[in-house]
Image (cartoon, rainbow, N blue to C red; front, side):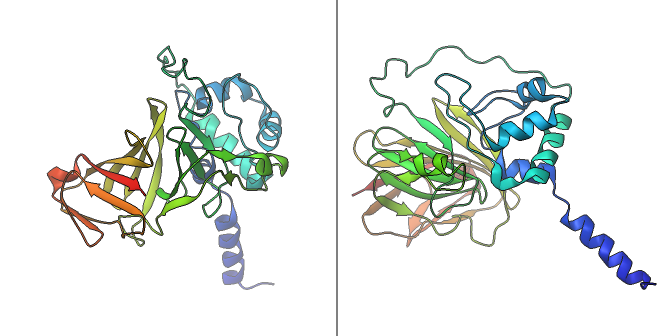
Amino acid sequence: MKPIFFIFAAVLMEVSAAPDGKQLFTMNCSACHLLDQMVVGPSLVEIRGLYEGKPDDFLKWSIAPQKKRPGAIDMPSMVHVGEEGLRVIYEHIMEVSKGAVEKKQEKGDPYAASPTQAVRPQVMRIFMPDASPASIAVALDDLNGLCWDAGSSRLRYAWTGGFIAGFSYWQGNGNGLAEILGPVRYTEQASPFGADTAMKFLGYKLKGGLPVFRYTAGARMVTESYSPVAEGMGFVRSFSVATPDAVVLDFPAQSGVAVTADKGKLEGGKLTLTPAEAAAFTLTYILK
């Protein structure tokens, strides 16, 4: 007969090993799927309508998604999550979408007259080099792109040239990485709020075809968005930070990158802001 404390420890190990549907959804799905409106992918309300009572169909689609919507970005395979993980994600979606109603979408496409797909802003959930599986590739325009990591709620790097080639990823059924079509010109090794700050991704919405990311950095609520510079290589990074205290953000200087801020004091790679300044400020990155 096993001692009671051994049995109790075994039970605890089993409980802790069980996958968490909400956590797995946040890490793998929330970048593209919101509750009641379509962004990159369909809303949870629409997914419920398609797969309610059909967990096996949901599982098959998630592992090997097919082209379904003309003009929409293809969903990457979620095979890396595993069957058990996908099933608890399904249960989470069914639970949180219960009783929710789809929001009406604004009509019209401001980029309909774009001569090439490259000019159109693009947001793609795909595995990227040097980033977590919850990466989001963003084409700001036909010259400037960036990788934003929903797993750690931060910018990873920015590049210039083309966007990305996903053939290796798609050919590998989710096991490969996208190829960046241009040189990386700016990188961040940690969140500007500090490597030890607890980060939590809350999703994003599209504005003008580009994402506005929402997350918490410790007790602070943050939104972060990007747009291309008026011409040439670079990007504008806009923040809104709700905080009762002064904020010091770390943007280490890098060769070939000129950074300016419209608020606060930027000195030695550190930006100091009062609470009022932190409420809305932008940084402009010129890539030389």
